[in-house]
Image 1 (cartoon, one colour):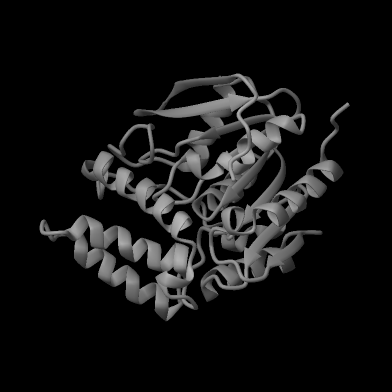
Image 2 (cartoon, rainbow, N blue to C red):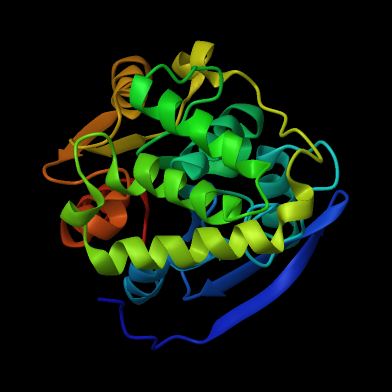
Length: 283
């Protein structure tokens, strides 16, 4: 259930190189930035956005380039530089980054390229730039997803469905075994992105840093969270971070797939609350 919306929200679009990022901010206190997963948008953090604002944090969430209400991709870009530009515009010198999937991938790159801007990391179902996808289940649905792109007869919906199969259902569940409400919510977000940003598909390539070989250089407190029903690629990424990032903490959620913040919300929030209490000063 979404938390009560009891805080005033600031919302605007911040200019970045060749585009703009739409963001929302609520609450006061140490800054925390929420970074959503690929093909989704800032609304996937509803359960955490309002809750964290009520816990005494300044919470910022935004749509990555090519997602939600941010600009469509028009050329090469870097998610980590976009985030740094957003923080600079908002006069946030340093923040805790909480990212899921693509958001975690961006958070890691940012911590390595702009270390002065990051005070701590919460990496959920993490992607890691430079680590290839090897799970046959993911490869199968990715191939079908790409094939659907060129089909004008229902291709967009098949594209979205293969996204859901990979990153909502996962390799161990059929759609009928996943919360219908969750699946419909993720379907709506992904479908909206496909429609709104269709002209940006293939228009630019996100620059990344190959963080896989640089994880030992992360020098901030790090918590990594994953679900036991996620793909082997994500489990492998999680293990690499837990074993390589100095003093990283790890927690796995039973009976959850990729969207751990929405499938195990209470436990996810509890883990985040404990971690933030150990890394930030609310006084």
